[in-house]
Image 1 (cartoon, rainbow, N blue to C red):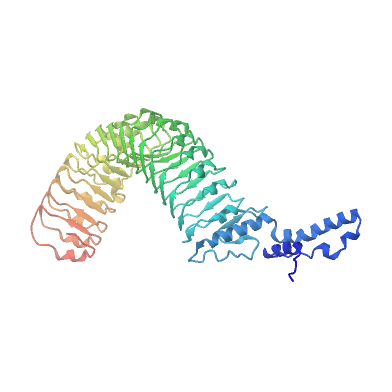
Image 2 (cartoon, rainbow, N blue to C red):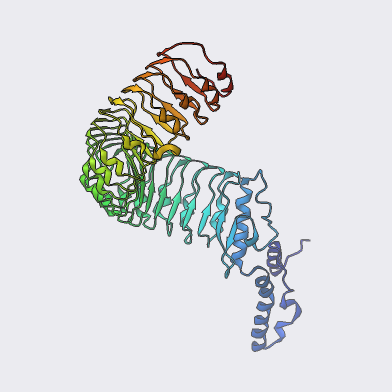
Length: 523
């Protein structure tokens, strides 16, 4: 004969499964049926207190146990080879002391989960959907795989999601953006997401930062992209996006940083590009963009980084470039710019790096560049520049100078005492028509690591002071008119890895002191 189980006992057993003690049911201790109506109401009230007070005292709230349940379910779906989550104990009712978990001090609800670089793998499972108060989710630099759960964006408190540098794949679900509630920052960078950027992106109006870089995304930029009025940072670089950059970017009046680098975008830059007045960082390098730069860009007075390298831009480098007073890094290399280097560049007092290499520029170096006192990196190689190498080049605190592959001529003029003595590490004057002797004072460049004077018309002997530089790693004097012998001081070049002296008129034997150059691999 089967025994019938009291349903009240079944409820008690379910509560016990959560590890929470509870008192005997009041109905078993008091004969309620014998009491009057008032007494029955009082007994029911007391029963409720006796039943739930221990539960609340131990767990704080039922919601707190939802957080424990969610985290334990999340843990069950993943592999933890370094045992980083060893403190996650399903027998505990308070997860606030667990590794990577942060809670609200008043409610004890989980508000942040940070498991960055824990070498975790597996799927990002449904357990996270239990964390109804979570605001920040950082799971970057792991080995998570699988697809993106579209329900993740439904969490009303969720503000920040960083799933970058994992192995996540598949398409980005259209529902993810279509139902986002309060998401402000999303990074899915360095994964393997494919397909188009969902058109619903434009409906996630709370977004301030979006990073989808280094994936396998294709198709064109979604029309709703410029509807994200609160967007401050946008990075879609390192994908296979095609088509033109649509107009309307002026609506992003809060935009500070944008990178569309390394895609397959084509066409001209939008005319309203210069209306993003707060823009500080712009990188459209490595695309197929054409035409001249829109005049509106002169209004980008707060821009510090302008990178447009490896495109098909043409026309002259605009003179208004000098109005971008906060520019620190200007890279227009590998385009079809022609004409002269504008004098207005000298107005860029904060400029640190100037790269105009591999264009079709002509004329001499404007003396105004000497006013760029913050300049450390100058690359004008691969153009058709003419004239002498101005002495002011060595009066700046430059670390790198390259004017190789031009049509410059005359003697290499270096002052007896230069500002670059202790800063210059890279000097490349190769592939020009410089003549005369190699300046002795090049031996004063105590930080010099690479010196390339090949492919010129230099004559005379090799200065011993250059070979005595202990810092030099690469020395290329090949294809000149140099004569004499190799100085014995070569034995002092203890850091030398590559020495090229071919196609000159050198005589004599190779000094035995070269044996001191133990790092030498190419001669």
